[in-house]
Image 1 (tube, rainbow, N blue to C red):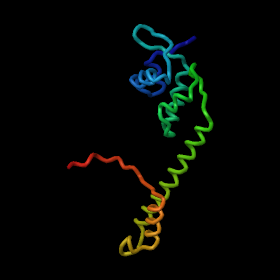
Image 2: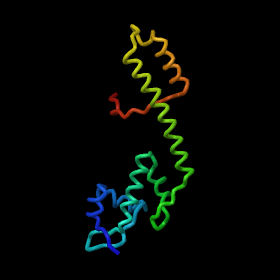
Image 3: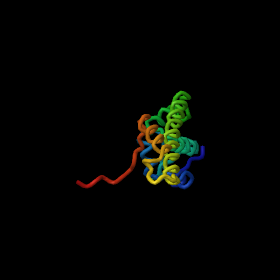
Length: 143
């Protein structure tokens, strides 16, 4: 059977060699041997890496993704887990839509002050009542 060395897997998948070694240590992929010091992989590793990338893009943790593979590396995806993630994404989309609409309204509102705008006040109340919180990635504040 034809094998891909780690350099070829990196080239074809755009996944760095360090990430391949990390995924292997986590049990997400497996090398099938070595040629000198270079790891060798079966061609199916490219599909596994694509599935890992898809899972990460959807917001699954690496531990969740590990559950999506049978011991031999074949996909074994729990459909209930997919439905739960889709529901989670729907909730995030709703929250983001409220935030987007509020920002667009605030940008175009003709009221002298946003706090005087009835529509903007309704949006504020809706956000507050639903406990919508958006995480921001900011630098730590200096004391």
